Image (cartoon, rainbow, N blue to C red; front, top):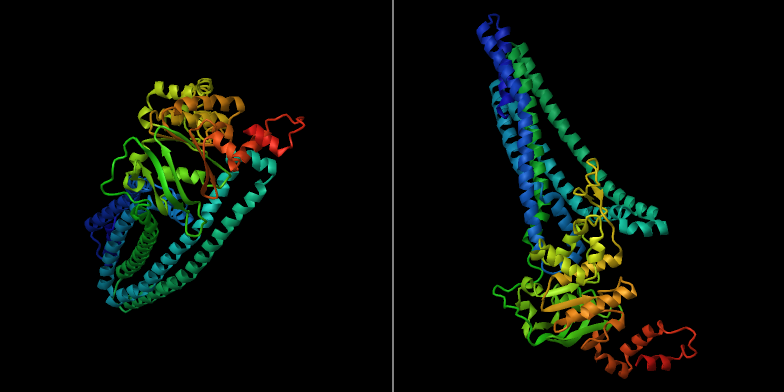
Length: 591
């Protein structure tokens, strides 16, 4: 492809010289015409082949780049990076540009090689006509190259600068079409408000892009004018040579083609270099994610985390999410004995969920230590630690997948074992609901993706719309995921029944009591009736352990736990009780 333009230009020159020389040779003319026809055929077919190769290489390289990116993200064992807005912007940039950049760089390198070969051949052609015209064309191209490289740096900086606005725009856009938000948006009538916020982010990003485009227009107009003046001057020079008899019509034709070819090659080279330069700058975000160090240190030779025979201990633990945040935990010391159930209670923000994150080693304490049978969690491989933990989180996930997959994600080894999946669903009280779905455990639980395997779906829409579950039904599936993990050494239950009705809550806690028996477990619940049978109840207040003991001893103590329990018990008493408003009566009955 690099040779085609030069070959066409020289064949055209030779044909003109042959015809204009006064003694044309039919055989030579026919051969040159055949060569021109062949070049035309290659010029017609070549771009399609080049485009196919470029697209195919881009797809293959992009697949590798994407896989490496998410492998790097998977290596972040904690949560801190996913709660850092700047790093989230960097990940978005890495996703947007990382997958395409390697393929684009390969394409740019090949394109640059092609334009250099073409431009060099045309320069040689210019030298054969008039060496000074070659110098003039090259001198005019240098400012364009320098200006475009400067512009590419400014554009890359602009793209990074508008990243937060684009991420907020994407958030508002997703919110406006999210089925989970649809009820509130319509009830509260805030769709227009959110649309205004979305448009404000888009306008801010567009304003920055427009400023960059105007700057590029001014600079490119100036460099283009310089190149045009240089080409015009060279053409005038060659025309004067032809008039004076020192050149011919073929020289004029070759000069026009060569100048156009050199300028096209320089322009193409500039575009390829600028594109590659900009992509390299943006690719820095991709490399920054790949090269980011571990968010939690993992020892080279981690110690094994066997079943906790003595228990788990928090020893003088202090933790805050950043130096600018208040302390979430302040000097917490407590022991979770092996085989015992420990309940964590307290007001919102007391530090209960933070403690769960530390037990799962999503974060490390800033001071103190969390010990697993006397071994600091920082000395244990996080993957091995978490393989020994089963959990139901308060903010459980609702995966847009089938019912079986939603449960099977709790233990990938059981993903294909329908018997184990159904047994876990039965224990969580979800089997009746799931088996009653249109395709049972193979029903898609999503309003986002169609179910192509559903016979009710049509070829036009790709499948029937998935089934939508209630909050309580989703919570049972989350509980089934925990049951699927089987005999784990530590069971964490963070508000496992918050979305259930009273009957379902009673049923779930009965099953959990059986499941917890003889296992080390941590239970968090604001419904104190669900924790009263725990072996030990720990009351957190302001990030500190305020009280600890059994249900009976804490009621007798008359502290925070007794007050919270009395307040909840009041809601279950008859309103016509004449002593209902007596605080002493409430606390006495609670005891």
